[in-house]
Amino acid sequence: AQKITQTQPGMFVQEKEAVTLDCTYDTSDPSYGLFWYKQPSSGEMIFLIYQGSYDQQNATEGRYSLNFQKARKSANLVISASQLGDSAMYFCAMGNAGGTSYGKLTFGQGTILTVHP
Amino acid sequence: DTEVTQTPKHLVMGMTNKKSLKCEQHMGHRAMYWYKQKAKKPPELMFVYSYEKLSINESVPSRFSPECPNSSLLNLHLHALQPEDSALYLCASSPGTSGGWEQYFGPGTRLTVT
Image (cartoon, rainbow over all chains, first blue to last red; front, top):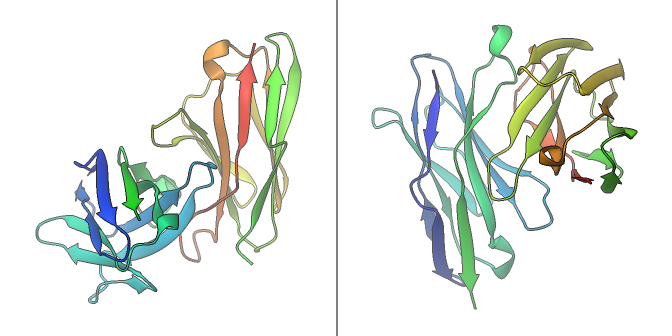
């Protein structure tokens, strides 16, 4: 069984500073993907970044980077230069590529990020 | 264009009503999903369609009936719902088993059952 743990129910950060949102996972599958989504109060889930289990380098997308430590089973999201618009719920998720499990994402409980001016 | 559209944005229905939620994507994706989300909780997967065939049903009650008329459209038919079914219903799509599996979500339908 797969499991995602986000231990920070809420995080606060000052505008323009960097923040790290924690995510640890557990799976026995050698091939998996890790995802981060942002959900503002409007409700839409916005895909931010993806890391494959066999990727050698950490994924980056603009101000978002994923600190992937495979041996520790962690996939932390780093947001650099925080903006007020980054205030939202953030979900970490894990999935498998194929077979009958295709499409089945396991989500963490989420972290609410608040950016202060 | 990574857009998934959903209609309606808001829906209020009585327990005896029949209504439908609609979802559309034009990204050429071959997998589509329905999720249910309660406030401050992660989304819960309900159904997965892969290449227009139902591939995953997460033991969803039969009062929810999905339909995939073609590769771009996904419907969720609602009948005899309960107040506890009130939630945000999210649709998503992904490329399919021959491509990546990052899912792109629509804005959701906020459903209230009275």
